[in-house]
Length: 206
Image (cartoon, rainbow, N blue to C red; front, top):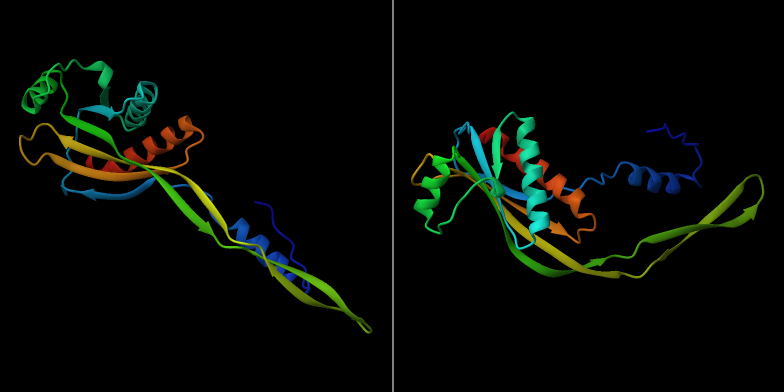
C-alpha cells in the first residue's frame, strides 16, 4: 500500500478521514458463520470421503474435487463420491462398504435453505464547503446533505458440513460447521474459498 501524504488543512481533513476509513476497511468475505467441535480429540484420518449432497452435478464435482485438493495440501488421503461404490441406503451397510474401501472419515455437505433476503442500506452524507469570506485567509462553511436509503434484495444459501469418524459405531460426529453465501456471481471462486475455509476449520480434527 502506498503511503498517503496528508496535508494539515482543516478544509481537507474530512475528505482524508473518509479515504482512510475506506482503505483500512477489509473487503475479505468469510462464508463460515458458525462451527462446533463435538470431539476434543484429533481423529487422525487416513482416507476421507468427500460427499456433497447436491442436484447440481457440475458444482458438486467441482466442490468435492476442491476439498480433495485442499486435503492433499495437508497430506491427507481422500476420495470423492465418484470414487466409491455404494449401492445401499442402509446406514450400517454404507459404513461397512466404505470401511471395506479404506475410508475412515466422511465429510458431508448439505444445503439447508435457499431464501430471499432484504437489506436496507442507510443513506450516506456528502459534505461540501462554500466560501464564507475573503480576508486574511480563505474560509469556508460546510453544508451536509444525505442520500436516501436503498433497499437491496437478493438470495442467500445456507448449508452445513459435517465430519464423521467411521471407525466409531455410535457418536461418530466429530465437527460441524454452517456456511452462508449471498448472491454468488463467480461460483468457481466461491467454491474454492468455501473449500479452503472448510478444511482450515477442520484441520485440528484431521
